[in-house]
Image 1 (cartoon, rainbow, N blue to C red):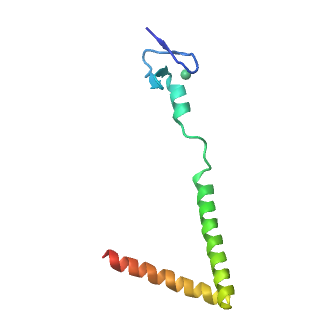
Image 2: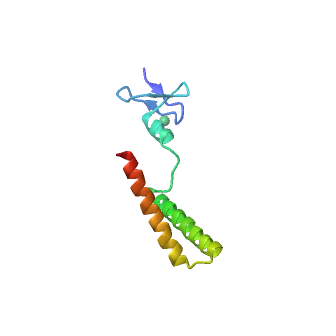
Image 3: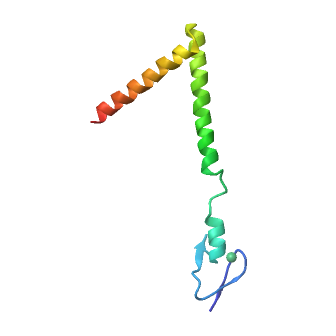
Length: 96
Ligand SMILES: [Zn+2]
């Protein structure tokens, strides 16, 4: 006895693996089509967006601090880099 897919109505071959979704039998085509996540931006676009937001946040932070302290942005950048490097070293020390 062959079953019919409840989504597309196609008869499911006996050699074919039937799938159950919401208590209804569906064919493999519909299973893959429905179980695939919604189309997302590809990883490159997402990585670029993440990098861009980090850079924008960093630049805004440095500019903001330089305005508050009335110091040149370059000096604040160097101080920030020192703090980041120092913090990473401390974190590594603590892990050991
Ligand atoms: Zn189907």
